[in-house]
Image (cartoon, rainbow, N blue to C red; front, side, top):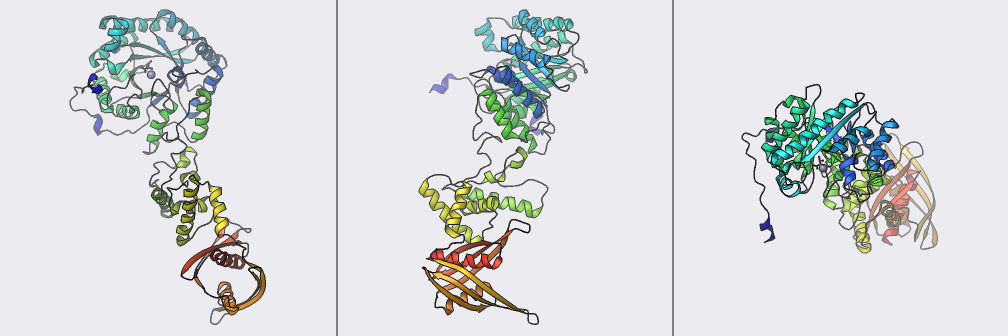
Length: 554
Ligand code: KIV
Ligand code: ZN
């Protein structure tokens, strides 16, 4: 019954809401708060060098607004900001943002820390929620408005002391989702009255879901209501800053964009307080896979993950959307089969659009390989091992052989109870099928081929020295091709009982030094056996395949 101690959040009174009928059509203004909100939540906050490294990464990804810290909060934060400015690390097209509380000594220090910056966003916040007003601040609504307005005035005062910097302002009614909507509007408009935004000097109003308290549609309603009701909408940038307490902050931010927001704050991989901030990478790639340019570059996601993990000491989970080590990998047989067919269809159909079952994004778009798409364990089907053999080693197994090899792989994974890696799969293939030389061995052979041009008939004479269970013998035969001639030679020497079933071949690799791979299936006592031969000479490859099949039977 412990659920009974929770109050339902309730709905938002908004008529004819528009956002459910909209679609995301363009990228928002992105602002990374990795170096502030993300950093504040780390067990070991980043040092100056780590922050510089992460800052450079954020710039390389394409962020144009980066909240770099809370410079009045600690010496490291202050030093980092000074390093960015003094070492000239901020590109022309990037604006740094800093956070401050509404207290004069903190605001003063914040402006001092920004000295010499070309552009900066100063981000002022105070908590406005019903709960915090009551239990933390013990203040009335008006007193909370006064805190915000005092801070807003101080920003105006200190801005004038640093005319060399082009300042913009942002205000967050912190804990917006725990605040009455009308009251949030009231406090934001009181701030606007101080800052007097224009269309050329807009103010950012950031409406944080500091704690995620309800379903994403409720947040969207709140944002639409706010956008519809706020004055001077055209002079304001509405920004969203969602946390992930309910695990739905990506949806909340996406619906918030539909509801009219212009800007998104978040962090790489969702690092941040408690369950984290919005994951900017996920939201950006969600756009990418809808055919929208996200204006952020995650094409080398592996490297991004490495740098992020190094700087933050956090780990990106194996199942993390887009970035996890396992998210492009299918172990299940039916998924592997569908992916394999989808990739083939994509090639064959020359389709303009990516459309592969179980792969919502082309792994290549984020610097991942097709090799990792299919990995083999006891859950995998016959197609998986064949996919690895083709993609990693160039062997295009005939259909019937895929099942044969698939079973061998399955037995091995069952036996070992582990995954089989690509090279282990190749080893098994080699051990079972490829150029097998025992107990029977082809030592040498000569072929004489006579082509009757008139009848288009080919007659092949073969003479071979073979070793059967260690005993050498010379055999010879005639046929319409080397394999046929060899079969006949075996019959003639009383090596009987083998029926030819199928033959396949393809080039391995390309160019003049490519080899031939041949696959032969034979039948013996109603059982079928595959063998594979590889050689620079197609006849040798075929005879090796035949011997491999015979040796498998043995
Ligand atoms: O989550 C939050 O509300 C914040 C504010 C400071 C914007 O991080
Ligand atoms: Zn936050």
